Amino acid sequence: MSDFLNILAFSFSVTGPIFVILALGVVLLRTGMLTDAFVDAGSRLVFNIALPALLFISISQTRIEETANFALVGFGLGATLAAFVVLEWVAKLFVQPERDRGVVVQGAFRSNMGIVGLAYCVNAYGEAGLVAASLYLGLVTILFNILSVITLQRSLHRGGGGLGRMAKGIATNPLIIGIVAGLAVSWTGLPLPQIALKSGQYFADLTLPLALLCTGASLNFRSLRDEMGSTVFASAAKLVAIPLLFVSGGVALGFRGIELGVLLLMSSAPTAAASYVMVRAMGGNAPLAANIIALTTLGSLLTTSAGITLLRALELM
Image 1: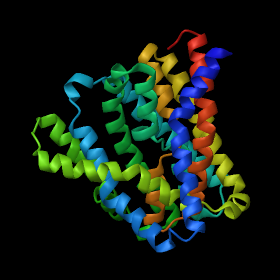
Image 2 (image 1 turned 30 degrees about the vertical axis):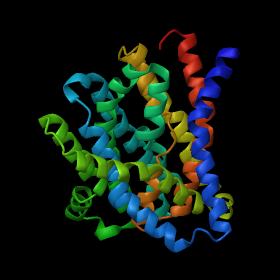
Image 3 (image 1 turned 135 degrees about the vertical axis):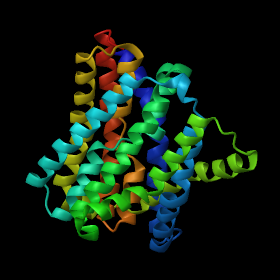
Image 4 (image 1 turned 180 degrees about the horizontal axis):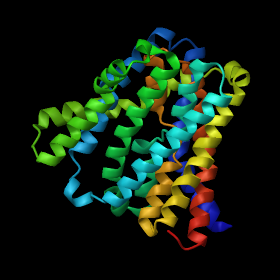
């Protein structure tokens, strides 16, 4: 019991500050210090500049040759793709209206790996956790963004759903551009000027607080009641079904210790704040995306702790 409480306290130390900033966004909007215009402009700033800068700086400074675990990364990519296909099929059957399907699917499979997941890994395993998770984070995040563009464009009927338009949406996505550029710098070992690193880091440091403030300001508790079914469906898939798929598949393939821990911690992280930013930028149901983020962030506190405790009891991690 004390072990579970210690793990719960650790999880709360990671997710607690996120909830504080979300709540602050709600308060600031209601007091008039934030406006809808600010939230719209702030969301576009995060999506087009700040978050790509964060991903670029993080990945470009990672030495891939020292961190590569291609079996782990390959499994993560395969499991993510499998989860996406199943979620698309289930959402087509049960999620209405159609334009919300992409929001629900993205909210269900897209983990906050770059912030919460990585923090989980570092706190659980220290430097070894950071090394094990870095390449996994970079490559799986590329797939996250590609699949997110696909599901949102399909459900919103952006550009008529043509493959050319979809490919253009993927190729011009600022998040994917930031990741690919970061991987290129990391692979080549190209040294970046300090002024570029410093400037990029300023934008990177802006990402989380601004994204969470805008997400909190967009929370709509009336729509949470009206769209409870979609919110709960996405949250249950994100917090239970997806981690179960990753962990059971990882155990079956022989992953143990830190590798299995990375799979659990990355997959059980709450829905990424970037999912709200992308939904808003593409004209989707932003309040639904924000509500999924809030509910999964709260639920992840319990489900991640339960998962860690179970795997430790079974001596698998």
